Structures are given as C-alpha cells and as structure tokens.
Amino acid sequence: MGRYTGILLVSDWDRTVTGPDRKVPPANTEAVLRFIAEGGLISIATGHGRMSHRSRWAELPTNAPHIVFNGAEIYDYREEKSLWQGPLPAESRALFTRLLETYPQLHFEIQCPAETYVFGEDHGLTEIMRRMGVPIRQAPLAEVPQPWLQFAVSGTPGGPDGGSKDWFRDTTPEADALFGGILEAVNAPGTGCYGSRSLPFLIEVQALGCSKGESARRLQGMLGCHTLVCCGDALNDLTMLRSADRAFMAGDGAKELLDMGFTVTAPSDVGVLADVIARL
Image 1 (tube, rainbow, N blue to C red):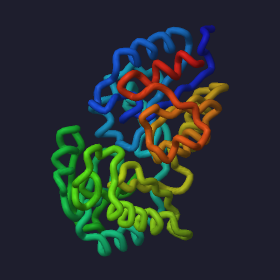
Image 2: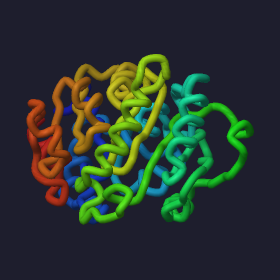
Image 3: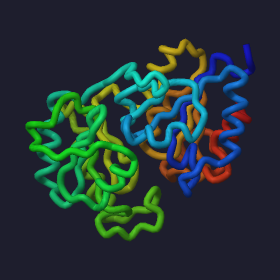
C-alpha cells in the first residue's frame, strides 16, 4: 500500500500533460513516476482517436488504460485491446449529412476505431493525421463502415480567416458564430449525440453517455479505485472535471473554466501534473 493507492488520476493531454510547445515538462514525468511508485494509477483522456494518440502515449509513463475519442473508447495500449466502446447512434448519420451539406467550406472526419474517413475542405489536416500514423480513407458516406466512434467538424485555426495567434485559445466573432451554431445543432434534442467545442475551430461529437467524464467514471469502476482525480484545460474536459472527486484545471486553461470552482494549477509549461500530484 502506497500513499496514492486507490487513486485514479485522469488527465487531458494537450496543454495539460504538455506545454504550449507540445512537449512534456520534466517536472510532470518526475511527479508521475513518484505517483506510480506510491500505488497511484494514471490514465490519459483525449479527443484524439486510438491511432493518433498511439503516436504519443509513451511520452509519459502511465499504468492504466487510456480514454480516447473524447470518451467513446477505453483502450489498453499495453495489451492492444479495446475494453469498452460507445458508438454513435444511427441518428448521427442524418446529422452528419446535414452538417456536411450546410458547411461545405469546413473539414469533416468520421473516426472509426482504426481509421478515419475525411470529407469537405482539407485545410492541411489530412497530412497532419497521416504524420501521426492515422490511416486516412475516402469513400462515399454510405460506404463508411460501422462503428463510428466520433465525428469532427473543423476549420482553419482561429476560425475561417485563420487569424488566430494561439489556435488553442484565440477566436474571432465569426468563428464563435459559426461553431456555436454547429454545436447548437449537434446538441439539439433527438440527435442522440453530445458535442463539445474542443478548440475554437473544432467541434467533436460522440454518442450521448460517452463523454470524458462518464468514461473516467467507467474506468474508475473497472479498476476499483476509491477516488477519481481529473485535470484538464479546455471545454471538452468539463464533463471530466465535473465528474471528479477532485478537479484541477491548468493555470493557462480556457477562460470559460476559470470561474467554475476548479482548483487552478501552475501553467502547462511549468507542470500541471506535478502541481496536482503535490496537492494530493
């Protein structure tokens, strides 16, 4: 029995595990190794899919399965095994089709367990996914295989004009109106879907009941832990923060989260996980 036995720590990746430079601060790695040595379990919850997250999951020591597709899958990378999936419902096809027809200037992805199908404008995103090892496919919508675990709608960083200085945070009124309208359509009654605006220019959509928060609790139950600790930085982390027994947000996280009562940590370039573990 160690100091952290029975604690499951679930963290977002971008701008939580990593700093703005996309690198893991040494303080985080050192703290996580101490946490694991004292009996703690650590997982990552990310909007990335199984394949794109594989390119980086080993950059930080972890000893629990990871939550991918914003909560739609729990995947064990050590065993190369899916432990749970929550596919999008049949109604999502009609929603996806309507959005694709309404916003032809945007980039669309249907994310299946081991491959991604792309539609609409590219904006260079397909090449980014290829560099991360994601198999990219193109096919008529009717031929995209099931299950769909997530679909995404995105534009250029900072909105349609691409003018953002910090594409994780900065936005424009035009981007707010565009992606706010898409999010409203996704979360309307009857779609069977839950969407979050993960970045100013990105909407990610899963089935109802498949958020990061709900899957963090699922993983806690699988592992038999008594305490769930979560940390994140963006609006797609909100369900996870609200589900946690103890919730922490990065000091340089989204402004919308700052007044919600979560404990605010050091900025991401200093070491969010190091700060969280020091407080446990």
